[in-house]
Image (cartoon, rainbow, N blue to C red):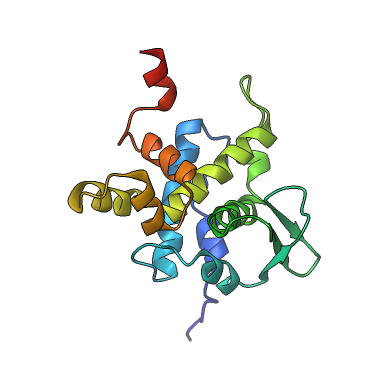
Length: 192
């Protein structure tokens, strides 16, 4: 007698990578990096720019809508049957891509954040979740391995060229280069 198991959804596979306990900042970043890498593999995405909208809408019960006059760049909301990821239609395409990746992180972390990202002495839970979603967006759109390949192997080291390659804003690229330690933080330069 064979038992057929129901295939796990992509969201379930990403969510199971999160330990069921409060996480340190380092642990959160490590998990987010792994989740982004896994999502890229599952979506068979092997190089920039990441087709973030195609990845998001391929997930069950996830839709993307662009609306004008949204009070923020993006928002994830559950309507009782599906996740609706709202993007500000007036934002630049690179900003919409980043916002979509950020909102996708909200969907992934929705059932997990309360336990994994509680208030700490330094940061309230809501702030920790927003920072986690920002980091996930960077990891998804500018994966560490691809960034190393572009920056070191291919020698693409100027922000405008890297931004075009990865389909992100100059600011997002600059922050990611700092996160990865490829360039010195702007505030460090000013202090020197």
